[in-house]
Length: 397
Image 1 (cartoon, rainbow, N blue to C red):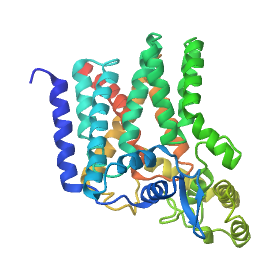
Image 2 (spheres, helix red, strand yellow; image 1 turned 180 degrees about the vertical axis):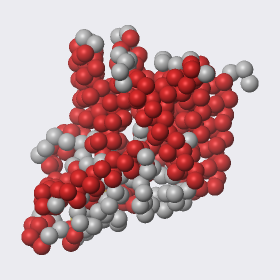
Image 3 (cartoon, rainbow, N blue to C red; image 1 turned 135 degrees about the horizontal axis):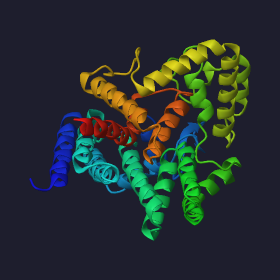
Image 4 (tube, rainbow, N blue to C red; image 1 turned 90 degrees about the vertical axis):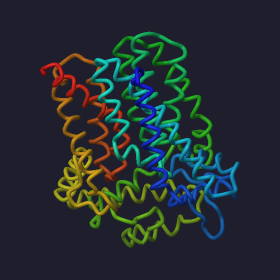
C-alpha cells in the first residue's frame, strides 16, 4: 500500500476488532457502574447511598461516567450498549494513532515516525484497553490532541489550535483531576516562549469550560475543586497493609480500616452533604501519621512504587500482570524511554518537555499507589521519547 498511514489505520482497526471479539467487557463494573446507575435514577453525580439517600460526590471525576450515561440513553439492550462504547473507544484509538504520527513527524524522519506509530498501535495493552469499559482510551485520545495542538501553538498563533488545546485541556481535567498539575506545567512553556497572550487565552477558555462543574462543587462542598480523593489515595498507598498497588480491595467506604479515634469521627460525619470532602481529609491525616511514625518504611515503599511505574512491579497481585504480552512490551518501552531521555537531556530541545512530563508523572503518582493502567496513560510520551532513542540508533547505523 502506497499510503503508510492508511495501512497503519487498517492494522489499528483489525487488531482492536479482534481484541473486542475475544476479550470484550460484558458489564460495567466497579465505580463506573455505580455512578451511571445513580445518574440515571437520581440525576445526581454521586457515588454512594446513605440510608436510602444519594449523596453528591466529588470523589470521582465526572467526564467518563457522563459519557457512559449519554450512550445508555439510546440503548436498553446491554450488549448493544457495551458494543457501542467499545466502538467509540475504537474510534478514539484510531484518532490517537493518527495524532501520534502527526506529533512524531514534528521531530523525526518518516521512517522513525512510522516505527513509533506501529509500536503505539500494536502495543498490547493499548489494544486491549479498547475492549474494556475504562477511561484510559479516551484519556490517550485527548492527550494526543493536547500534545499536538501544544506543539503547533509554540510555532504559530492559530485560533483553531487555541480552541482545541483549551477544549482538550478542559476535558482531560474533567476526566482526570490530577491533570491540572501537568496542564499548568505545560502552560509555563508559553511564558518561556513569551506567548503571554496565548497563555491567558488558553487559561481563560479552559477555566470557562470547566466552570459549571467548579460552581457545582463550590455550591455543595464550599471548595473550588474538580475531585477530592488525594487523601484516600494517599491512605490507600501508605498504610501498614499497603504495597505498591496500595491496599487491595480498599474502597472509600472502608472507614473501619481507620484508627478507632478517626473512625469515630468518620461515623459522625456520615450523613453530611460534604462527606466526601471531610472523609478525604480524615484519610489524609491518617496516612500522614503513618508516614511520620515510620518514614523509612514509606521511603522504601515510594522507591518500590517508582520502580514499578517506570519498569515493573516485582510483587504484583494484579490478575495476568506477568503475562508475556504485558510484561515484555512494558520493560522494552521503559528502557527505550529512559535511553531517549539520556540522549536528549543535555540538548536544548523541545523533547525535554516530554522528558520532564514523564518524570513528573512518575514522581507524583508514586506518592500514592501504582496500578498497571497508570503507565498506559503515558504511552504517547513514552513513544515520543523512545523514538528519540530509535532516531539516534538509526543515524548511527
